Amino acid sequence: MKKKILLATITVFASQALAQVSDVPPLDSGQILQSLKQIREINETGIKNHRSQVLAQVSAASQSAEKAVAFWKEAVKAVQFDGVKNEGTAMHNWKEAEGEALGNKLCGNAVKLHLQWLTLALQHSNGVEVKQLLPQVIEYTKQLQLDQAAADRLDDQIKKEHERGGPMQKQVIEESAVKRMHEQLLRTPITESPVARWLQLGELLSEYDSGKKKGGPSAWEMTPGNLEGIYQAVILPQFRATRDPRLLEYWEMKIKRETDAAAERKLEIEQREWTQVKRPALFWARAQDVLLLGLRNRAIGEMFNVLKSFPHHPEAQSWASQLEELVKTPALPPPPSAPGVAAPSPVPPAVPRTSAP
Image: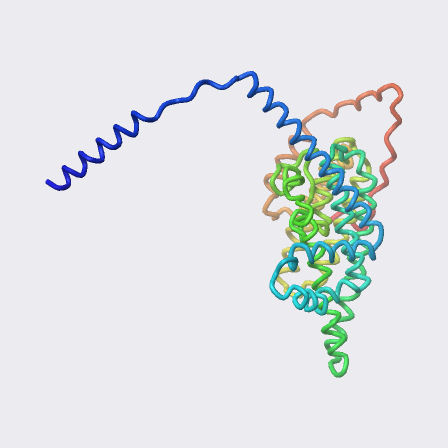
């Protein structure tokens, strides 16, 4: 009985409340639309100005290792220590640990590379096309490879000193800290670094993240130390779109790098997988780009050579079908050059070391 009375009371109050609710007079739709247009313009202008400002800041900081490190430390202070309890002590402890490693030449160069790659990404987000940035991107990859060679030398040095033991252990600890910091700097995506958080860059760059896109001309690699990712997302699409002979230079570099890495593997199963599966797949992939460059006969020869050498490869059936279709399809004459367009650069012959599996 009490429940029925309570339910009836609630119903009465709800009816009274509903009766008291009424809509307001309509707003001026024309005024709303005009205001929305102004809001969009303010937003677009604000984003454009923000991009220009942060681009100028990052570009200036990337001009030298010293400027880059100072800028990075300022960002770390802003996002990790400003306003925290015992701020001075916390910042001092960081400088004594991670901050100390930033003073090393190798880490300083890594910070500079990180900011240089961020600068290129910001230029792209500002509307500069990849094809215009391509020379700078290629130069960046060269600097990145030099940096990686220096890091590899440090790694070898650490291993040797560790094996010797004795009084060198303190130096090994310091060098190991440098190695960890160097890796962290180049493995941290440019959208997640202290600089990105400080300058609020995540949203400005997220739409270009190659990890979220299926490639395409607007895709961008967000990890500054990911050499292969930079090639796949930024460089190779441009090379393939223009049938650039430098495609073969890429394959020479990649096969050499993979071969050197395979030489470091000790397990027999890893060596077997490299020799019988991964290496043939690289040669097959290279042959596809040889075909793209218009070198049909050379491509057919390379593909046939892979299949003859590795008939038991997991992809052999698929490869054979592709090659069969290619051989059966008559060769098309090369398209005539457009007036005023220079002839393509000559393609260098295959290097014997990597021309066949």
